Image 1 (tube, rainbow, N blue to C red):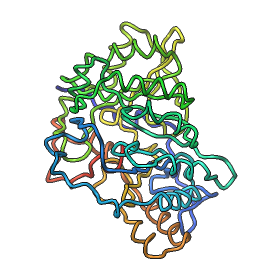
Image 2: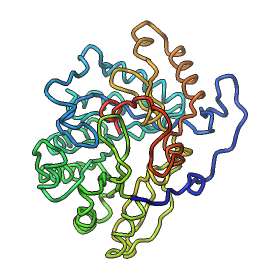
Image 3: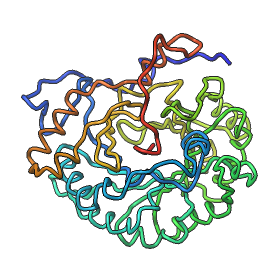
Length: 377
């Protein structure tokens, strides 16, 4: 399938301007990378395990019963995660998202949430503390998560049709249980809730309108449905460009039945383009990492469950902080390392992907990218 890739320059909002820096790259307390992007968001993977086997993330033929997961001793403890998070907050992080794998599989995750919820920015403000989940355990955990201090959840859901959903999660898990988890999260006050649907052409594009209708009619503005382009994350999902359904096509498909109007971004660096239903009954979002790269606004850093920092979702190498932690480094040494890592960052994978030939084939072998189940989405 051929479609026009919209250049990044057409999509940038208020491109960052070069700014004078001190020796650590800090200006007015704002840590910036080589492209002028601030560090504001930290995504923390708390486990490399998941109870789903979605083909675009953890295909069963790769992550089978013989797959070797990280031993518990390799994982960062909750205290280690919290200490690193405190260092990142001092460098400008204002939002923390817990991911996986499936983060609710991590035993006593509520204890970690309590510790992170107690952190404060240098000006005394609380963090924006969120979690992304497949929803399988959410119904039983929602109240405890809220009580621990979690503010919001994002739930991954790729279909309403039970047959399609069971086929996509490849563990015969029923869609009704995820929907029950979303209801429990709403009742617990973990909102506004976002629901993410990965659209894979030839697999679930027929679910776009049923998903839009369901969350608009049942939840209105309480749940924001977002459609994500199928991405070439990791090295095991067999990604092909002809299985990508461009977000522009998704928006057009919905608007043909439910008229839409564009909305402004709600925050700098927001990944989703927002569209409101013309009659005011809620909104949707589209995340277009393939066809409309947003690298120049990316302010996110990822911390793996074993303490490696990754500067991009499509990275092939990380920076080991666990060795420093367990080797006796003090907080200032950790902060210097974080500043050095971020200020040298120039990652812009999606932008460079858009410049490849139309067939999507790059010249020469590419480094093996880290799996999404290891560093989170």
